[in-house]
Length: 401
Image (cartoon, rainbow, N blue to C red; front, side):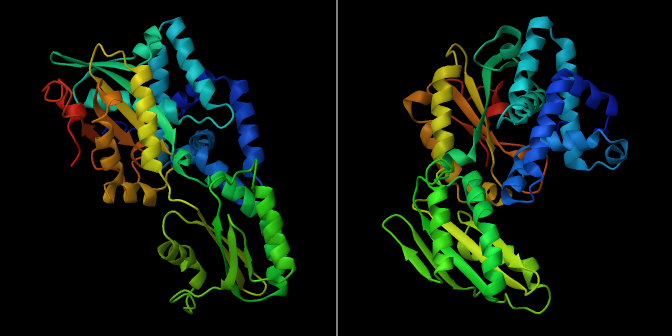
């Protein structure tokens, strides 16, 4: 696999920071630092989303660079690949590359789209393809033009957040927990014990329209010492926390998150508030009124991209990156064949006519983490496309499994 055994390179790191722009990078770090210093669930969410920027910043310290592990080395290798690409590009295309970096350093953007592009190009090269960055060179809607033997294909690198398939976004859940947590700690100090606050929430909860209302309801419920608050669109219920084995004498709290996840499933939003003085614990467990539809969100994006970014003059490969997805969710989407089923249905629809294959990857594959797909991505070939049996394209489109 590309970038597997590269040594850390401080020169490349400095060059990448220069390419990004020193002032832009400093501004970005101040913004992330301000949001990540709060010691809250929102801060942890910020750290996770912007992990690449944080890793690159830490590696700028020679002592940290010297002991960099596998994931950190891969992040640095992507930065080095960006520098190599920039050095090979004329001025106009290099400006497009810098604009792509700048987009990743603004607002809720990340460097994931850039690194996904670089990794996709590298993967295709290792599979025997000549790769040309048409998007940067010529401003085309597709990102790459690849060639092997007599076969040619357009490649689109697209990133979609798993949040688009969650009725309750993790960021909004973090905001609710951060609002409620101080009151929960006060309540726990006055009510020693182990509790769980179960919540079934409406589908449209967000920071803009329902978080304040839910916070007020939870506060009123605790203040009045009620055990339940139910309405047509939300049910809140406070019960004793009972989990099999949770009272084990040897460090039960270390096992609590795993026990909770096992009981409530991957789709539940969980948060634990503890009172160290008394050993008391209150767990918040929330589910939205409908199931997550992450695979469906991926399908919607694929349909949009196929129509908007492929010319139809050549077979199209859609390289989709699913971001904001943890390892357990990714494993679940694969093991249940949910993602595969949705993508294979997409490949039978009219929007997929120019698509010869779809590939899928996550941060697990990007950073070579546990639970990564064995070959670096999942690949699903469209059997209805005229180029589906092209020997030249086979290494890029051969269906996974």
